[in-house]
Image (cartoon, rainbow, N blue to C red):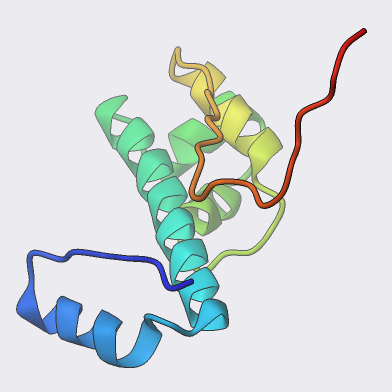
Length: 114
């Protein structure tokens, strides 16, 4: 089943409706790109709100400025959750991950307890 999306931009709505909606693989790719962008933006926002350069944050975290820069790149596909935790700790935050429902599960999933 295609994901229903509503965009404020007519151009984005047209693009979604014409090229993505109804194509499960394209919808998954879109959702992954959106997630990657959100993570990269969060890292950037944490760093800049803390008033830190790439190098200064890297020093606090115990890594290099290049690693911090890569995490701010939505196309970066490295293992970043552990580093995200270290970055959050360095700026006095903690990572909170939420899993939210996107669709109702198919079939019975309840167990009877005796």
